[in-house]
Amino acid sequence: GQSRCLLATDIGTAWDILNRLLAGAGIRSNRFVDDVLSNGCEVVDPTLVKEHAERLSDWTHAQVLDALHGLGEEDDAYHLECFQEDEQDLLDEFDKLVVFYREAAAQGLAVVHYAA
Image (tube, rainbow, N blue to C red; front, side):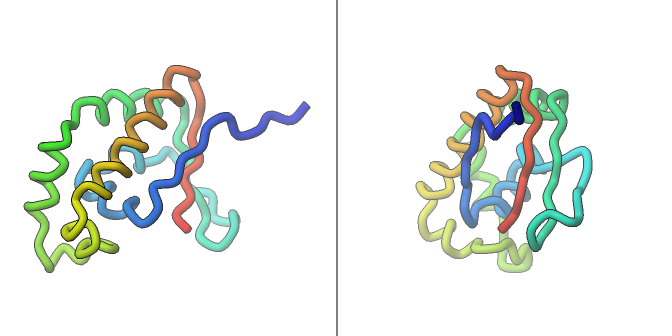
């Protein structure tokens, strides 16, 4: 039979700012597929999934917030002001990303990242 999605998460509008703060951990991919829905998607192979899981596990909430505080208006990150006003919301999305990659790595899965 066809294989289906085994894990899923949605980090909502936090994907761009987490990508900036975490230097690509959890977002950087091996290849881009252009003709998927309207924005295309990123494919992260299982080896890079494991690397992302390791890199993400090295981050603490304090480090994420320090990186957030280091961003200025010139950084122009998507929804930056929202997360500066609600830091806990950003930490919640970060936690979801960490758990997702930990589970995907443990199962040896590839990841498809779609920015809606």
